[in-house]
Length: 85
Image (tube, rainbow, N blue to C red; front, top):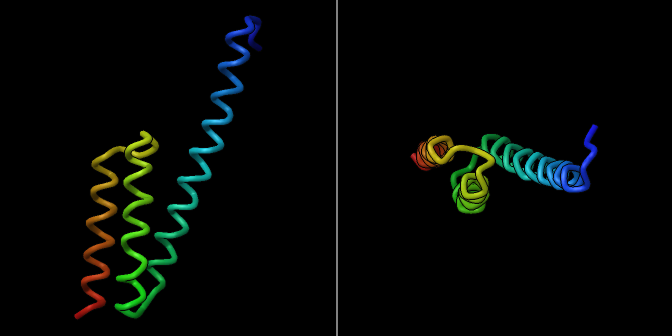
């Protein structure tokens, strides 16, 4: 357990950040899952920009790596384009 005042504060901050990061990550994963379940091209095309923005925010905040964000966006775009055919 922390003994110094600053260390206790750091632990509180880390807990808040961890909870916030977990929430944002889980929300994004749920949105991706919902996109995978959409079978019509129109609905998927409308939903894609929102999810891409969410993934970009995760990468910007350092929750996921920028290359992972790029891979996710690429896979989602290919999925939506395949629905259009």
